[in-house]
Image (cartoon, rainbow, N blue to C red):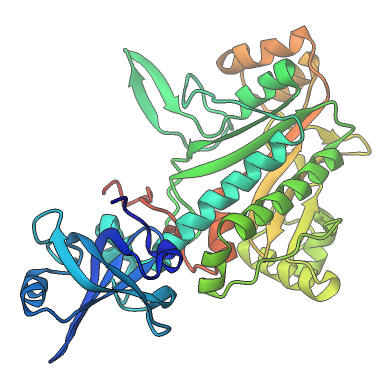
Length: 428
């Protein structure tokens, strides 16, 4: 008899079926016992009246893996409207050691550090696994949207010979006696691959050795990177980003709609044209000094409230960041060279995406590095490619965990990360 999932029981009412999963909860009453079995799809209720089966049930602990064979019987009060009656229950392993929190409760009451210390079992709770389902659906939507627009998925090295972004901290390692680093981004490689495929994307880990200990930073996170050639300027990149976000949210609605409904989430609508303000105007709106070189979190929150009040949008582009705050490969605004053809996208008052137009001429790279007093040698292999003809191009990167945290309303990005790596955590 083939195993079925809890969500398939309704299609088998009146039949003998086999399910398997974890003991989610037991309720031992005087004349009847209830066993709730959890599988990847949801919960199934098993009704036990036979004294022998009940005696075996009493020996089981929560999270023990079991197989149940019984009659699928309609009952509107049971999960999915079906329960198993006249069952046989067979453990598929030894009795489990119960975790240090109750997974059957609607919410995990343990502190976040305790949950992270026991992540392999804490992630079994629906509130934790739900975020990972949404994450997977968002990535599927990301890929589907770009595949439909003739982008090619690439896979770039995560061990590199030099840092990608000058000034940012990197994780150093020994590469057969030579110094190497964990990649801060696939930036150099995705630009070079524009010279091959014109339009590329990657889903992969990036590493930042920045000593942040905040609710929005991780030392390793998943970056959704996009790069495209033959752009007029950064606005072409912003248009692709808009469509990509819409595709990601459509993917969440399609692939994780049940999870979204269970969490009571309201998916945001991506406007046909996301409102945009120049950096100088953003400072004014946020009440920041005119000479402020960057936006602080408080400024981002103020801008998010403004975008919602003025445009009814959860999204806002901030364009024209000062060149001094952008990497050396950023293309300046031809009309205002002190400002860049770069942008950030704020989602509900939080920076979610950084992107822009890149330099594409070899001489411009030499000049940009010289202006910053940086040597060419560490990035010579990258810069040299521009001698061989590269089109005007640009791209962006979305932080997946930030996106999911903002979408679900999680207070800490670690709540939506399976096994977070940060300043203090290297296990489990």
